Length: 95
Image (tube, rainbow, N blue to C red):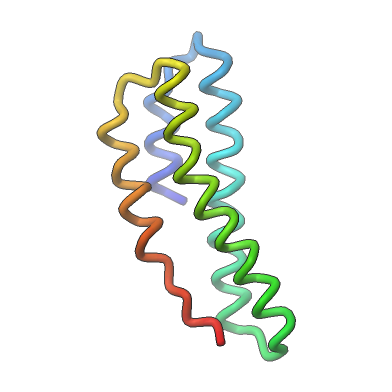
């Protein structure tokens, strides 16, 4: 979440499209944080699998947001590579 927030701070104030994407990025990062914690502490298999599906979607959406950022002129794309690298390290320890 912190990495996404810091990258969001690099978005210029005058670009409405990028700020819209930033909102989606922060939402996806927040979902990841909450659902990973919930999945690790959960007892019921069904709830763990539901969390796993949401985690997978949010992580994938974060990766896809890089295309939108690039399309709307985000200049610091090299920093977003950090988010993409973290996306590959999400702990799928949900059984």
